Length: 109
Image 1 (cartoon, one colour):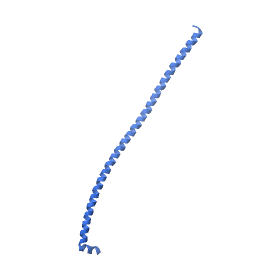
Image 2 (spheres, helix red, strand yellow; image 1 turned 30 degrees about the horizontal axis):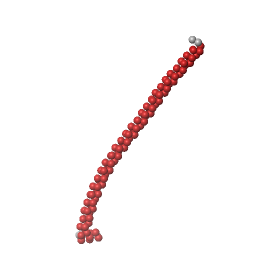
Image 3 (cartoon, helix red, strand yellow; image 1 turned 90 degrees about the vertical axis):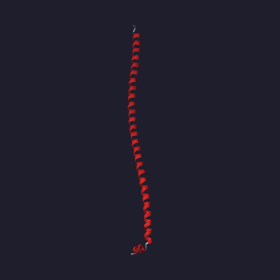
Image 4 (cartoon, helix red, strand yellow; image 1 turned 180 degrees about the vertical axis):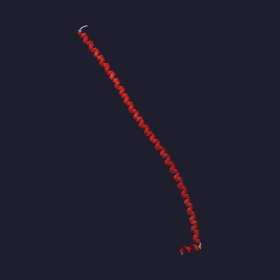
């Protein structure tokens, strides 16, 4: 073998090794990038789960508040009906007391 062929062979081997090293390094970079992307995606998924759980809690709280409001509305309606009935009884009592001549004399004294 002549020194020229040895130089060419050495150059070809160096080129092949460079290509191999480049592909291998690129593969490692791709794996690291994939791992990093996986970690970021996992973190985003965890945060989304927290948001979802919080939304479910808020939804339950809203339902609970709605039920409380319905109960309060029912109580308000019953109280208004009771008050209306009381006013009718008071009006009747006032009417009866005003008809009585003794009630007028007792009020003035």
